[in-house]
Image (tube, rainbow, N blue to C red; front, top):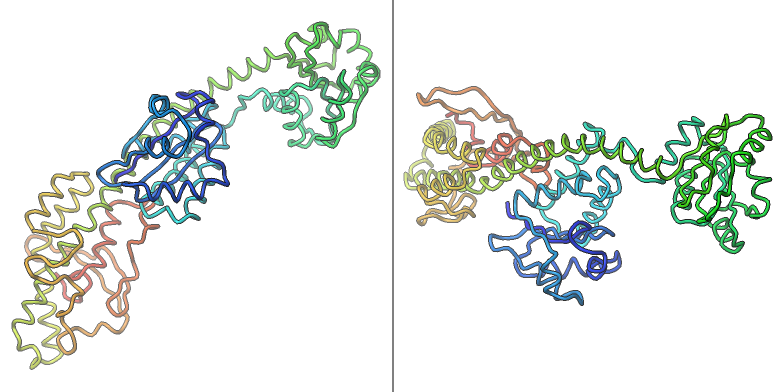
Length: 507
């Protein structure tokens, strides 16, 4: 496998630099087309979010200059860019993408948004026609790993943002937020975000109160809510079940005695105060009022820290899971890379077999039964001779032993594409068996491949495939090299398509 990832993210580059190389959804198709045309790039995908810009490529042995691509495309200082870029190759590139998709590389570990962003980047790259079989396998494996991390760990089960924790606390108090009224006091950004989360969880309505009426009206319109005049706040605040305060006032907006009066008017129905203002808006003594639940910013941050510690423990388990999946992916990639060698070995042997049958020149006088006997005999001999090198190829592929694969290719003088070797035509070239010399393969039939042992005895059937007119149903298409495919099954699938495997002659 040959993958290269280049990029920068929230950990190693300031936002001032990230925003200079950010790629909008509108610009993405053009950027993908340009990256695909960049020297050395075979396939590509671009992931651009508020926290990262990354280029994922499948390439040749010579890696492309992706720093040069970014420096040429964006008005950014090349030296400054190079100082902040990171780069990963091959297995490390696979590991990086797996970690990104599983939210292990996110600013907030375990957040769910990043997987959706990776899927959107993948969809855009596919739409642009710049994803081939290599990135397809990598992306499908990424989605599978991310799903497994979510399913098998609790990495995303606890909230770590202030806004989402506020929702969790309100849910613990009320059980359900359906029909609950929310009062937003002040126009702080965090309070606005918390209100959005509450509405998303089913809260019934939003009221907004702010010293500046225009800002209150703007927020109320944004939420489809109502304005509560600030001067009426203490008299009407009891209408709300949940109050989110972020006024920036230097004095308490709500005191203990205010809470007592509000609970009396509510006939004891509980109220939840979420005070995210600094200085605080709510008197801490409010906590001593029965029926009032008060949480300030420190309370929320303490919950966030505890939840983050839980996520960190789960992240360690997820990291081990990712590393195991990287190793599995690498083994599958080695097997896929070995398929051309296996094809070439079998194809070369089949071409030699057919050439020798043609040289005999006397098969036309044989009966159909005699021709079939000769075909079975020669195929059986070929399979026996190829048994040991085929097993060696399989073992080298599953072990990821590239040097052994190269040695086997050199020993058998194999051309990777399966073209003619030493003047012998590849299977499928002109000059193969035809007419009366060829077996009748026009009718569909079941064929079971059998491996032979060293003594030449028939082995046990290990695979079956139906083929028509000499074509196997089982193909090595890009989508079949994806996550979960066992390496040995990939090699068996490849062997089923090769000459000398599908014939009726038993080896």
